[in-house]
Length: 295
Length: 323
Image (cartoon, rainbow over all chains, first blue to last red):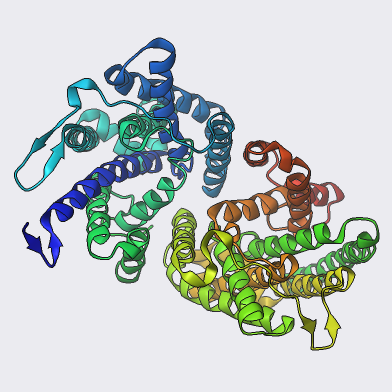
C-alpha cells in the first residue's frame, strides 16, 4: 500500500472522488442560482427544496408510471421547471419592483412549505432509488476502484455546466440574456419579450436543480431534507465565487468539493466547516468573491 | 426660513410620535404585569425571550436595512455560555447572563466585520453561512453535550438574595430584562445614531457622500443587535434551564425573521406582537408535527405577497401613526 503524507492513496483518491461528486452538485446548484440571480436579481432560497423535488419526482415517476432513471433525468427537470415557471408568474413577478430581499423571504417560505409537506409524508429517513442497470459496477484503475455511476455523475454535470456556459456566453440567445441582465428596459425596446425570458430563465435554473436532484437520488437516497443543509453550503460557494460569472460558479463548485474531500482525509473534524472557513478567508482577501465584481 | 420651519414641524411630529408610542408602551407593560396571573408564566417567559430576540433582529433589518439570516448564532451562543457559566462555574444568574451576552458581543464583532464587507443579498447569505459554521462547531465541541445540550442549568439566587426557582419571581426578572432591552432599542432608534442608520438604509451612497463612515455605523448596529439577541438567549437558557442545538439551528434564524415580518418590519412594537403570535401558534399546534413548518412557510408567502407592512405596520397605517 502506497502512502502520501501518511495517508493511503486508496483513501486519498476515494475522498477525492467523493469530493468531485459533491463538487458536481455544488457546481450545478450554484450555477442555477447564478443564472436566476443574473436576470431576476433574487436569491432563490427554494433551490434546495427544488433539488429535493427533482429527486422525489424521479422516485414518483418510477413508482407510479414505471418510468426509469434515464427518462426521469429528462422529465423531472421539465416538470419541476414548469412548476417553477408557474411560481415565477404567480408570485415572484409581483416582487421585481420591491427590495430584492422580499424574493429571498418568499422563496424561503416556499422552501419551508415544500419541505414540511415532504416530511409530513415521508419522515426524515431516505428512500432508496436504484441506479440504472447500465451504470452498475465499476472500473479498477489500478490505484483505486471507480464506480461507473459516480464517473457518470461527474461527466454529466460537467457537460451540463459547460453547455450552459457555452449557451450564455457564445450564442445569440445568450447575448440577449446577458443584455437583459444589463438593461432590461432597452432590450424590451428592441422587441424582445423580457418577461417571458425571465420566466424561462427561472424555469431553467429550477430545472438545473431538479436535474441535480435526480442524479443525486441513487447516491444520497431520496430524502425530504436532502436540500435543506446543502443549500446553505451552496450559498457559501456562491459567496466565494461571486455570482458575476457562470464559469466562476462552475470552477468554484468543483474546487470546493475537492477541498472538502481532501479535508476529510487530512483533518476530518473540519470537513463540515471547511467551505465556510474558505468563505471567511475569501471575504477577508477579496470581498467581491473570486470571480465577482462588487456591486 | 423654510428649513427652520420644516425642522419645527419635524420636531412637533416627533413629539406626537413619542406621545402615542408612550401610550402603547404603557398598555404593553400593563398587559405583561397582569398576564402571569391569568396565563401560564413559563409560556409568557418564552414569548418574552423571543420578543426581545425579534426586537433585536428588527433593529438590524427594520432600521439598518440589513437582513441577517444567522441571528440564531447569537441566541444560541449566549445560551450555551450562560448555561455553562451557571452550571459548571457556579456563576450567579446576573453574571451568567452578562457572561452569555458578552459571548454574543464578541461573536457579533467578529461576524459583523466579515458580513458588512458585502451588501444586500450577499449579507443574508454570509450571515447564514457563518451561523451554519457556528452550528457545526457546537455539534462537535464537547462542552455543549451535542444532541443532549446543557441540561439542568441552575437558576440560582439573583444577587445572592432572591431565589429564582419561584416561577413568579423568575417571570418578573425576565420581564425586567425584556423591558430594559426594549427601552434600549427604543432609545437607539430615536437617537441621532438611529437616524443615520435609517439614512444608510434608504440610500447608502448618499450617506457616504454626506461624510458618514457607513461601515462603522453598520458594524455598531450589527453588534448592538447581536448583544440584545444574546441577552434574550442567555435569559432563555435560565428560563428553560437548558441550552440546546435547536437555538443555533438555521430554522431558529428563519423563525425570528418570520416573527418580525409578521409583526411588521421597522415598527417598534411589531416584533413583540409577531413573537407572541408565532410562539402561541407553536404552543397550540405542536401536536401537528410538520404542519407547523408548513403554516410558517405559508405565513411567509402571505406576508411577502399581500401583507408587507405586517400586523402592527398595518395598524399604524390605519391610525396614521407609526407604532
